Length: 330
Ligand code: SF4
Image: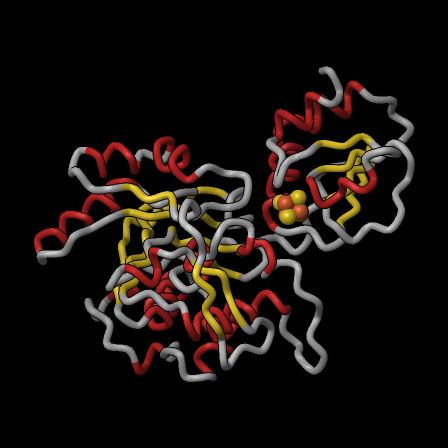
């Protein structure tokens, strides 16, 4: 799920050798503490052994960056470090993504959006006259002002299927580096057996001239790169099929709650189903768009808090799976 620490370690070493002062920064998904995540993922260990500072980028006050060409968004709150450091390097894992097709070095820059502001990109209304989802357009908008200077895409072990957090490991043994983030992402797509033309945020960004996605126009070394191509399983179209006995009501949730719910159902769904009467579905609601909910609905996440008096409510943004289970005293 996270960038392999050895890839981060190699990047620190390489930039040090080139004479740079290096720091590793992160603004994680809502509900996760950056320094805890870096510790658990093994990145703290490789950074500390090199005396490389770790930065929780949500601590300082944000900078507002205007997006003159923005269609879905006109400004962004970015972490202060993004404007203070000379060079920003995006080091994502090579993954498929249930909402955006893939998540690579362009999409990874959402990790530079300040605190909860990154959630706002998932909550945008549909745009009149556009086929694409507002999230895809917003990521292309973001890439007009927030592109990494260098992309290092970690395909040592990627993730296929239901990424970004509930997919399956995909060992590929590849690390890919490029100065044009769109070109790097497009090549990663090529390795994953996906055309960048089918990834809306890459297609829109390339059409606007933010980078190149046509593999025939990219100087790729080594030239036999296709030898390591290994198609990734795409994210499934529907998420609910395998969870019989549950009814999920989703109105304007973001991927954090969707992933949490999926992991909860995978881990505890059977246990919960067996503990409840057979003849009725367990109803779970996520997202902020519900006007009314059936009494007894399990409301997951702060977005559903307005129903807390008539429903079972689990707070958090997102909550963790074990907190959801705790509501049932199992
Ligand atoms: S409560 Fe859930 S859906 Fe709402 S913003 Fe938080 S993570 Fe997203």
